[in-house]
Image (cartoon, rainbow, N blue to C red):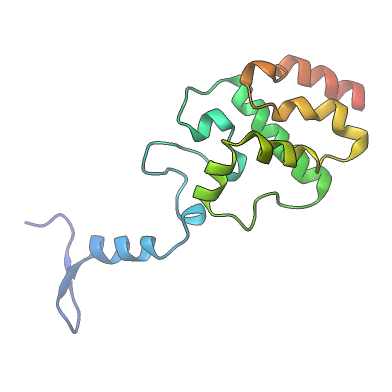
Length: 138
């Protein structure tokens, strides 16, 4: 007995699974899934470089993501809106792309936020350090 019922169409019988699978394939990857086939999980536009490689995540990964959110908030634009998930992931592997994002940080905040987008996790501030910085800005 099949797990999913069959649906009669004009051509031939199809399972619900087959119809859903085809529907999902027609949706762009960035909108259709938060998990990519190699096991990477998350929203690509807010991933850290190590997350795009499938490496172990840490507090530093969250700090990078927070940096991306801050840049979007302060610049007033979505940083990667015209990119597909795979374009975003491959771009985040490149230091030159990440450096181009730091150029979007408004000048008055650049010194406080630029290291959030450091390629190396150990070069990013800790959550405690970020909390201290936020208190100083307020």
